[in-house]
Length: 153
Image (tube, one colour):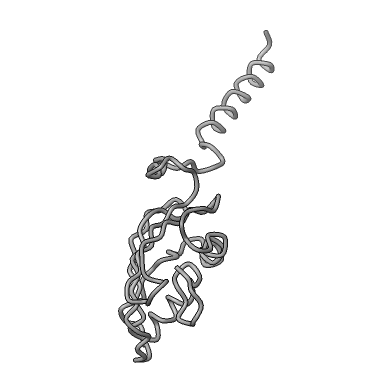
């Protein structure tokens, strides 16, 4: 064999090894998400509402992707959650502690949300104790019950 083909083979081998050493073109998750309680696929949230009034207080289960559960309107609830989900932001993030909020009392309603959304665990509290909290709550209606006369979760 002449020196030219050996150099060609060696060059090809070095190129191949460099390409493999660079790693895959995508980032695989390090760990799989934890299983859902009932082995369903998709997102699952438990909503506990208190102080919102008759027909609104109680415990509700919501499944999304596909929609289900005992929430009064799972399709609309999943849609509003999807609309408020942004890459790199927590859909259920609390109001920043240094925020400037109007001192409006939106009533005694509170909500506690637990479960999994977009592959991440959720443990969030909601209230209507000031303007920022009211806006945060209202952003997720009809997942959270509305303050109007209509009945929701």
